Image 1 (cartoon, rainbow, N blue to C red):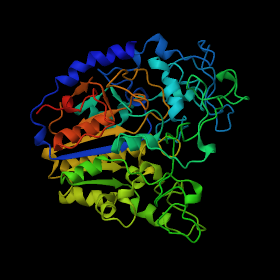
Image 2 (tube, helix red, strand yellow):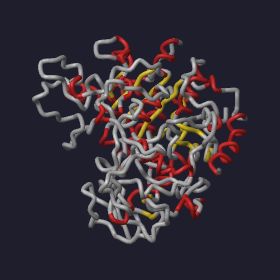
Image 3 (cartoon, rainbow, N blue to C red):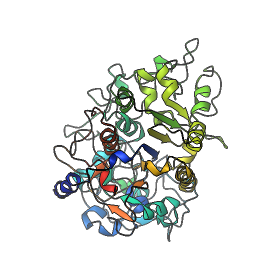
Length: 489
């Protein structure tokens, strides 16, 4: 019950957030990075609820049978074998990646734990956070963390506000959490094939395959997972119906569309924050690194090799189509006026910052090479890039009336010890999931402040809704804060 008590404790701080002065913010910028939990990057941050505050129950990971592991399993490769780059028999609990005996650098490409809907829900284990190792594909690695003090973003967090109770809106991965950032919704795909559906036990957990190891010490768990719930909701990665998509066009079909025979997500019609902003005449845009290049790459003949979409060729964008939520919605289909007006490239962002012509609400998605996602990029490149964007914003003539929120889509499968809030108004079937970093940078932000208000990704929508008087989106959770406690107007 500790997670519920925490939620009730922080309800007061949400209710007493300052009510005046928010109208002084004229520009809200959201920078959306990738796949890191709070403890993984900020677990050593002074004044924050960090690794030292974890209980023995939260630190001690359990095996599939519910017994404490005598030690952590090996770090496993994608083939389920011990990865010889890393030591074995690490003690059961969190460990420093950048210290003995592991000694890996934050400039390296390092393993990526699985980050999927059912796994994240089971890892949290009712708020105990002690099944991360049992339900990962990567063994011990899920428990690793960095001393983040060398990061440039750490310095921004020290100077402004770091939120240490900010949770990812939905269990699982990037696809679903990007949708929750813009619509606070989990769409259905009624035409998805049966093979795409997860298979569940009676208790709602994923069904294990017959050959799945009895103990995680013997190898990673094997599951009957899928991108669709048994009742048809898309919870794991589905590809956009429009280019750029991970599914090329059909041979002889429209180059603007993903091949429908390969089951992309259907065009979505749910209401988004973009819809509610446009309804009030509030200017806004989603800027994405590599957007123009990826759009051209997606429109290639399907027989041609792609060089941008999911490509790891260097130098390159490593563009991830499932990180582009508005590209799933019918309103922003290719050829529409809404698409041309609101979906833009990083080069457009730079030009708009330098001209002082940013719209009132900005979402910025760094391309794969710069978003800090494990395995296909490192922490250092993304840290330097986001620092550069923040410096550029601070030099902008719009800066005196600007608020910037830097956060992450989800935890990337990394352990975090703080239980998500639970109970009516705090949680629902879809989340919130594990804790993630969030930094508020603004002339109005409290300086040197650790904000302990409970937030999740829908808090970003709440802030935008409150500032511009928008129609609320139904999925936004009633009790989470709206980020105004981070400001001192």
